Length: 423
Ligand code: UDP
Image 1 (cartoon, rainbow, N blue to C red):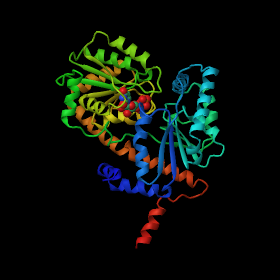
Image 2 (cartoon, rainbow, N blue to C red):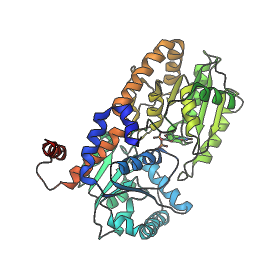
Image 3 (cartoon, rainbow, N blue to C red):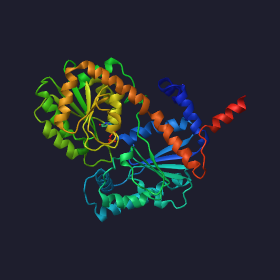
Image 4 (cartoon, rainbow, N blue to C red):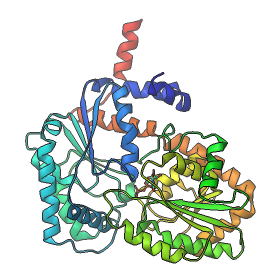
């Protein structure tokens, strides 16, 4: 059975037929996605399945990863933090490393990117590649996954000059979008229901994580899965847990994280988290390898409630993942979390540890609410945040760019032609 047949079982045949129809003009077209890490973080999660799905639709899709020295990642992490609002000065030296690394990567990617029909550049790390392709053949799209709603101006101004020449930009939601002299598309990210991270598991797999990490299945469990990053507010999660534990002494907390290879700050933040959790045997800090997808899946199913107490968040795939498993999410009232956590329906929005603690108590005292909100959460994800919807919007964007000089774009003409032919 093909990958598309597998998705048809979850989303229905109509969804797949629509994808095939939209992909028809792109049979054999070269589509290259470029980012800066193959594992760790949401972008890598999405591309892992987006590429094979595009290939099954007849598109010649591929995924390139740019590489650099530690100073490059220091600089791009600084860009990430400043786009999310931190006021950090990036030295000319670091920006020089950024530009040089992009120039070097442009050389190694020259053939693939010059010939590509569509190039999707993800986030700021590879954004400066475009200037090295004056003879590019295809359309280049800058895809911003970050909460760039309140960027530190000097850094946005610097990055903007690399982004202006693109043919289009994509932001995850309207609040993040910036004025640019090309079309802006709003496309939220998605999860893959068939990946190891999200696939249905046997109850035995959930029991195994309880045993492996010495968690007590009889006691309530709350979970946050996130890189150790201050924007994810792991310390705030510990505070919320401590406040709730005063009323629920049996409460357990798991903070599961790992390292993205392009995140140099993880170790420092992990140290801070370990210090804050010191002395409490019911706080479990798990450092998981980047391929621990089945384990994360099992932890998300084991938890009664998932937290994502971010103070900035581009989208928050961890939120989607937990909701898909029928869990209500208590999330920070920021960025893409707002798109997913519909307050009082699919979870709760909470801006402070006190607010989060209150919601933890509310839910754990009423298991039927956990079930009711969890069920709504799952349906909400099925209807809005699966990879098939994401792919459909990428294809629609490609159609729009392909025919951008035309006044009218007929999205269904290829299938109509086919139907007439078949009569
Ligand atoms: N993730 C993981 N291992 C970890 C931490 C996170 O596999 O230790 C995954 C998580 O399940 C999710 C993605 O990485 O799929 C994180 O995406 P999100 O949008 O939540 O945050 P980002 O890291 O992109 O800021």
